Image 1 (cartoon, rainbow, N blue to C red):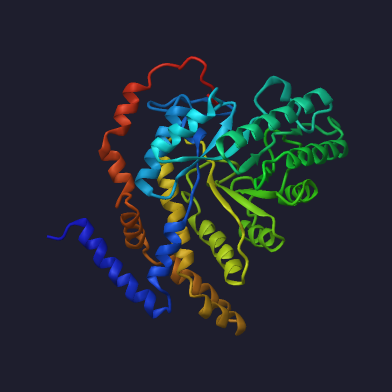
Image 2 (image 1 turned 135 degrees about the vertical axis):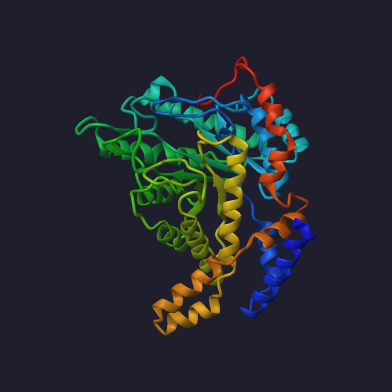
Length: 411
């Protein structure tokens, strides 16, 4: 009786023959998948909540050290998640040299630095958009602090999201707030370490339900352009109105040279922070398709692929593994699009043919391909099954009891 690995190898060989028939090289596809980097967020491993409460889970990481340990498990099993984003002050430590050594020992490294200018009481009415210059300056000093942490950790990304907004008409002067944002984002940009970038994220609503200061990709693009050449736009998949064509936004931002990165998650209604691909994996596939279209045309955007999720119903590490596998799946399928055939169908205005070419790639079973890639990377053939069998969850659920003194997080 064949074991699972033998079956996967047989399916992998069949897929290679199929791709050859489409004019695609399976080795080329594999090399692209091996080079894929997906950054996981430290906060995705800890307790998190909603506006209604924080729901604590057994085994949830309580400080940056436990978060890094969980992230290392995800990277060990998937092979593509070496970088871990930090959130300051939740992940603040007194010795960043020691933290770098710790990450190296775990086999991971520090990714984007994410400031927090929304949780302290002084930011209730805004940070860079606050009417009080003292509050705006406090937010600016925090961003300078985060830039210093970038220098100490070797991070090359400053990832910015602002909760600034208002809830009622007439509550604030929106025009003045725009000017204040321009001023402070420019100061932040000019203080970046050499070679570093800053990403400006946007969000349609929440916690500001009347207006949000950086509400959509057009506003984020404006702020990035006014800040300077090393400021780019960060696209969060959950931060749009219903029905928005995100892949169109992606293509547009690449065309103007301002797509800096993603926060992968999924949504059904709003900023749901669901596991990537749990509701609409086809959307992720189409996003990757537009990126690969741009690359085929000669564009080489420097894109940071980052996960940003708040796993409440699912165990933290398992949910992160699911997201990584789904992102890998969407990317693999996008790599299988027969672009020569697609170009030909487009030239003939063959609408049905164009869609069928995309669907042929999307409907391809890429599991054997991804398993082979992970095998060659020294990762797991079946990451989720191996994690469940490892006993890691039982171990951390037993060890992580109580609250650690001085630890900070969302919950």
